[in-house]
Length: 124
Image 1 (cartoon, helix red, strand yellow):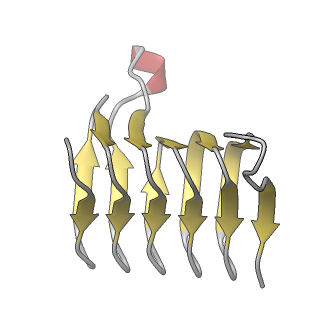
Image 2 (cartoon, one colour; image 1 turned 30 degrees about the vertical axis):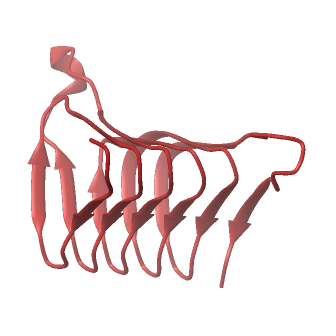
């Protein structure tokens, strides 16, 4: 997709082994529920979100079995709950804002260029 993906608040998305990719930002609104219905025991894969911009999860979002790759930042906002995310990679910053809750996840922030900043921030 050549634009951003914006999923409005209070939306429930059930995926199974999907890849969502765009050249902009992927934004999930407040109180969204994103679930991969696949089963690891059945050989299914996590749902993958790839954005050349940011991947942003709104306040009180709930995410299960979803992995992120962002060309810029990954932001998990206030009280977001992430269970079994698996892998999260950002060229710049990975931000876990106030009361974000993560389980069974690997976070990685890498240099995109010599001028890019590199942080893993836990914000209160």
